[in-house]
Image 1 (cartoon, rainbow, N blue to C red):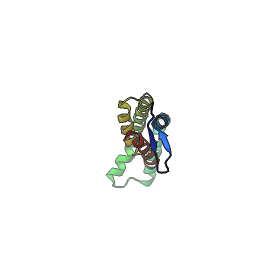
Image 2 (cartoon, rainbow, N blue to C red):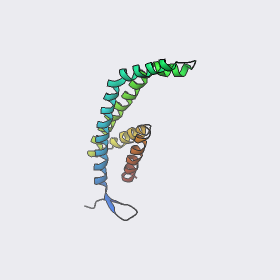
Image 3 (cartoon, rainbow, N blue to C red):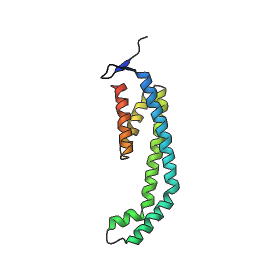
Length: 140
């Protein structure tokens, strides 16, 4: 049986199966990190919300309605961020399982999750760009 391989500029060939394994490991590790970050954010939301409100009350709200809105609803925005992290973590876990078992649907979930992680600037953007680049190598 002939194995499919990829060649880089230097002529070194990579087995597609090996790259798929690496991508599934990236998905599993990233899903665990995102889920942990989501739970930590949920745990510290009340503390961070009260801290931001106390800092804002010391400074004074002034007449800026947007600043007042952001400070008052800071806990809500933290909760939205935590939900974003938890959903992405769950999707990446599913994508990692699917890629490991060579399921067709997994690559769609993989692209969707990593595209959303591009929004987490700067670490998420760099990490996501690298993983998407590696995925494009095996799926073109």
